[in-house]
Image 1 (cartoon, rainbow, N blue to C red):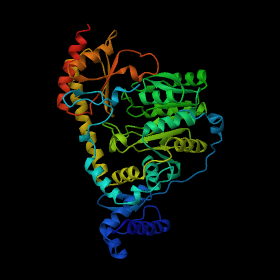
Image 2 (spheres, one colour):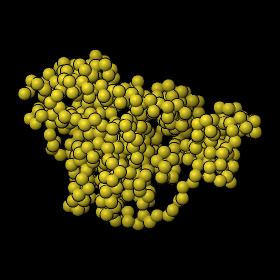
Image 3 (cartoon, helix red, strand yellow):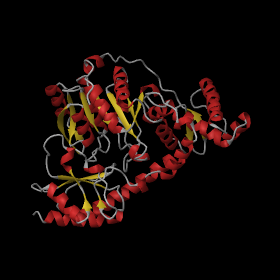
Image 4 (cartoon, rainbow, N blue to C red):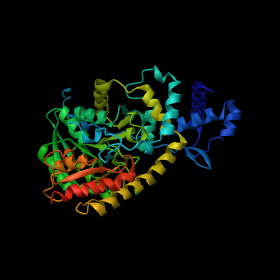
Length: 460
């Protein structure tokens, strides 16, 4: 059966769902096949579409049920007028994380997971299916394919499809946020250290960064309050779950305290949930799920967890901020390729996607622990916390360590590391390196740690 058949079936089921009470069980797949004269594949495709739209939920071994509708309340977004101010000007360091290296080196520097950790089979199958559809020639809506918007909204759980803007990766989303929510010459509060990508995006947008120190538990709310008060900033960029580079994960009480500060200053919190699929010992709960007043602008990327070639992310925003972000997105990229959006949507709505994410947790845990054990044995001078998720270990080295020299010495021995300096928006607060435990060949971790330890010993 073709896409038209699944679309007609989905439309018929939507009409049935509209009259059904929450929790009602849908007819079985066998009954739908018999009633509508379609194939089982068509039924499954229609049900996946309804699931992505947040209309139904599947309970394995039990059936598919009408999802309980969330109450939609009108909210006053008038406070955003003062926070946004006049429309900003439209304005226009290479990272170690993006370096490509020969296969014979120990690559601990990358910002991306190895292909063995990606759902390659799902991506290849989704690409083949998408290539047979109109996605190869059609222009999508500027805000994104409606079904993909609905998936992002349903995945967050506190948004509607109309709140979502699809962007070509999270870096594009950060650039858009810097221009649309902050603007040239205006301040943006950031954690220190923070993701190097926001530092670059702010520089291109001529945004002034205001750093606040942030540790394993996130920033101190009092420090954040002072930063807002002294700078006059109306936006704060943060990574509450498995921050890059530190791996920090905020507890619920810290998240609530930070949100209280942001609201008190009539500001935005730009939440970068880049590692949503990389939880190891805890599952991330986005701050956006705690906010329904438009203070949190939520950025969720699929690039690292689906495929580096499928650069797709979603921004969730409400009120006038959403319209300004959409205008900035249109100015930057007009729209995101229909083909890439179709591939991403296909992958994340396949039954195998959740299976993949569950298996990924175990693989990342094993790699993290393997690298940590090697570092404890061969680099006892380094201090680090074991992150609850993400892809990296953040090592504090002895004071006085020449991190740049350390990197060069390691590279001469075939080990590439990332010096921590590029993650600080101002002067580094110490000697740090970031090591990625999701890279290729975990069997080489011990060799890498041994080289780092030897190079570090030469500086003592």
